[in-house]
Image 1 (tube, helix red, strand yellow):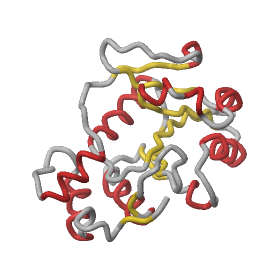
Image 2 (spheres, rainbow, N blue to C red; image 1 turned 45 degrees about the horizontal axis):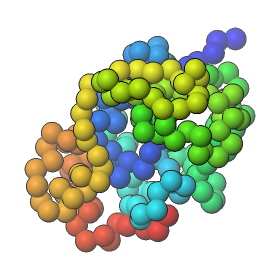
Image 3 (cartoon, rainbow, N blue to C red; image 1 turned 90 degrees about the vertical axis):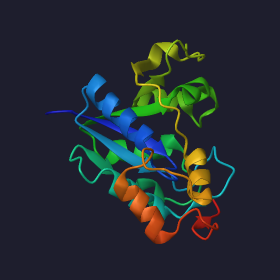
Image 4 (cartoon, rainbow, N blue to C red; image 1 turned 60 degrees about the vertical axis):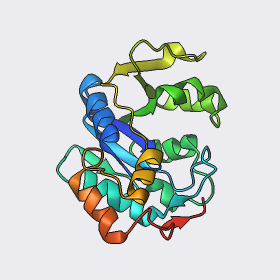
Length: 199
């Protein structure tokens, strides 16, 4: 039976930006993946700040990947109450898709903190971690032998910076797709915190 290779790119995506697209595209090519699923976190356990509503974050990712048939959005974490621990999500995915090999795509800073993740030893047996390297940087993790690393162009974008730019009315033309920018404008996100909810 054919085994599909699916990459998972998790995050709050508040908002999603071109850096996310570049990482997903590079991971797909370098790891020879069939698809990449963008997985917005419902209740991210590592985030202490408030995030925009799940409805808006999912909609923005859908707008961002509308032209890519090999990119999808997974809302699996919104169907489960409580903190969105990755190990629980992957166990559910493995149960629902037994013929899929999952690759979990993470940034270099997250590679270094893997030892703090919930049931990391179990998780390492369920997925192949794909670590996105910055030029000249070496991962600082005891799990280095279990990390498949990829190189991507260095583009220092963050959702935090983008929220501030939207709030202050600065140019964001080259940071998010045109459709995401339009969605943010129409829904007036990041102007006064009306789209924010507790996490």
